[in-house]
Length: 161
Image 1 (cartoon, helix red, strand yellow):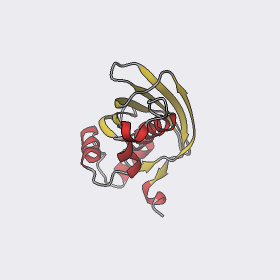
Image 2: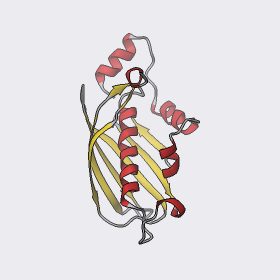
Image 3: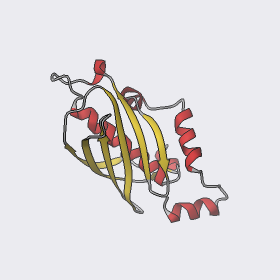
């Protein structure tokens, strides 16, 4: 988490959330976005110190396949975007969202329906930009796709207006 954000929380009297509290909040949420639901997103681990998250996706054959019976690349991009966006929320101590300004994706092997593991992290959290990284892995641990992105940290209060 950014030291500046931690300073603001302490100044405002709010106790910073623990990794366990953030994970519990994600897992109990009843307001998961429909895109996240479609991708089968489940947050499995958060680490504020490393500004990272681990997630799983349930890639459904009835929704996400291309004509070659593989997960369509656009859905893999959406999964990577989810990994990196959630990492930004965790890095901020759950005080910011971070809409993606740009993203570059490289595909290494076809993804099949079923469980896909994702890792997202914030490489650099700045005042106006966050630089993010994400990877997707198949059940055997083989790298499927990798992305880097630039996001715009936005306090929840400002975003909701």
